[in-house]
Length: 111
Length: 115
Image (cartoon, rainbow over all chains, first blue to last red; front, side, top):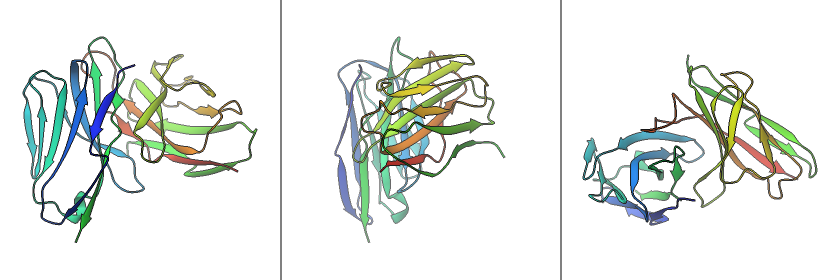
């Protein structure tokens, strides 16, 4: 089945530093979604990207979809303690209705 | 108050026993899903259902069974055939599947431990 690789697996940053997680696929994706899971919680939808080269922003979060629609990134500017959690990308490719989740990047903030 | 509920939050079972996890949604969503999450891993799809009385196997369906007799309910049975059932189980729903995938809304999860 489709595989979605996500790196890094873990990231520890000082509060105020930036953070980026990357999602890569060997196949072209029809769209990609990003979810955040707080410690002990459940995944919560953040955003969906559909168009090649698309960039969307939510306050300090910037989401990008690659030109070839095979990769995506999530960048957080000036991290805060509330950003702690695991960030997952989830993708579908053409002809496949199921979401495939990446392995996630667990973000820890050092105060 | 709309949403997805899962019960129980924590569940313990003895090896060799079947156990059923509940998932209910009042969002009027057509599609429902069951995922399994293990430490350090992403979510893996067990089963999904796009419509009442129909469901499909996901990537790791062996040892699990589901039913979809009502739109609101999608219970998951973990059978004794599942070799390593201890995990965090998440149920999700979405308005529909196909084409542009819709947002999935997750329940709070059930943490199953096999003793």
